[in-house]
Length: 141
Image (cartoon, rainbow, N blue to C red; front, top):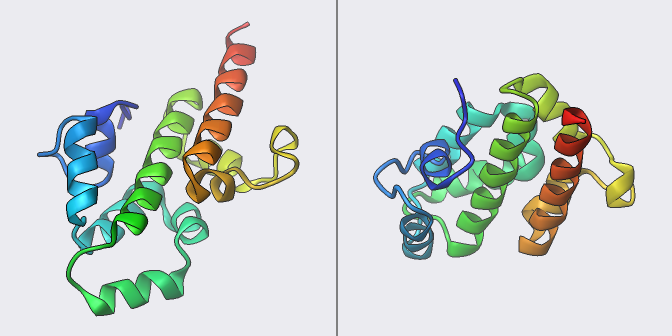
């Protein structure tokens, strides 16, 4: 499955195909994504990446509570989706290689784990995207 790192690809990864655009996704996050987004995203990115970004106990608690996710949790899932899609593009849809990158400490991130940096905030997400862009340039050279 080829992943698109745009609004459509992000919406698909989050199970929000009807959102379509980045604005549509932002509005859905603000309104509260359904709790089912957790399981949908887990199936898409795999257990090891998802569990690092959203601890198992947290996901279990959110599922039990039901309803809609907070905007803070929705933003965390969004950042996970963005960096995962970008890594999948760089690693040519190789989920194992993308996961390995996201879960291994990286020297360009002061030996921090990329997924930890990315889900922590938008500036962290941007730092990981910058490292991925650098990898892409070195791979294409």
